[in-house]
Length: 257
Image (cartoon, rainbow, N blue to C red; front, side, top):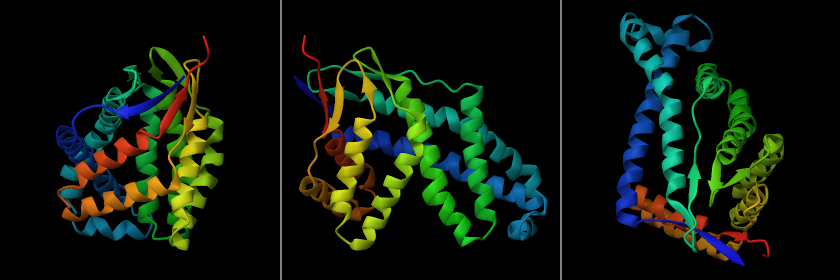
């Protein structure tokens, strides 16, 4: 028997909830990154050292503590968002997903290190270094975070698992998708291809995960989302629309009784 995942809840209400989460995470992220940039620049390291001349006093007295506070809060807010998002997903038979991810010491250090690392890279105005972090390092780290979240998620009370060691396998596939955009139409096939591979990496005794969305429908959903986003203020609802369709492409084949 096959079950499909679906995003639960009305689109209008979910759009407002997503907007609230995005504003909260966005404000915290910008505060942490911008404040961190001034702090690092104040040490006189790298080409960004001149930044402190803009706020010679406030950079240390106000910006630095505020950035540190945002950096401390960010992991809890990000994990809270993911737990909330997972709680909105269930199968078409009513089986719910639940995430019990908690921010412990190593997890906090990983989140904080990730943001500090990206801030430091931005200060060194090296295009090669920025590209390397954006398309090689960050995707690998993102996969590790995703694997950690999946390992703390259950479907119908049954644990799920995703391997950390597949980070580089994900990275080169991610690069293929990025490069496929240059071909104008290649992403229509590359996107579902990556999603199918990712679904296949989820292991659980509940059933076998697979991805059934066809390139044609993937193209349609992306185009509708882009058109939906032209209003700018409609972006959160466009995000709900796209995620509802993409999540609906995930199938779980239950083992025979």
